[in-house]
Image (cartoon, rainbow, N blue to C red; front, side, top):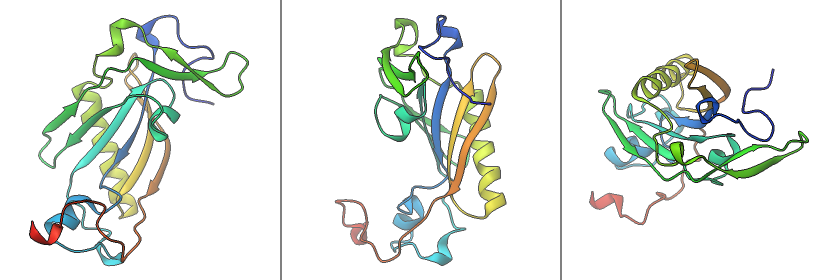
Length: 178
């Protein structure tokens, strides 16, 4: 069964689903790379920092994956502290009424500046991602749909984050001076 908002969008803003992506470690090696002042190698797969990034928005997940609509970002440290960046989510993607493709529509004013995820959902998503990371023994990239009305989490896709060794740091900062 497909998971997501009905074609054309929901009539009641309370029924709008949240889609997002969880990274159990940055694809570039994140905090582990910076803290250890080195490039990530194949031996470093299981040495994540414990930092989780969740990016989420109202509507279809393509908006998050392809950066089409504004997203909220939640950084969760290993101690459960959450650092949130909440954006004005003025629009979202929904399936076209004919069932072919997606279209961008305006979000209702009641949810535009509201956090797309609450504390309980954020912590549950972190637990799901941590469980996947422990099972696969690799940092993970997890796509999800969250159903606020039922508090159900649907995993759409989960895959290990891959690293290419020998690449320069993806930053303008000289990490050797940190």
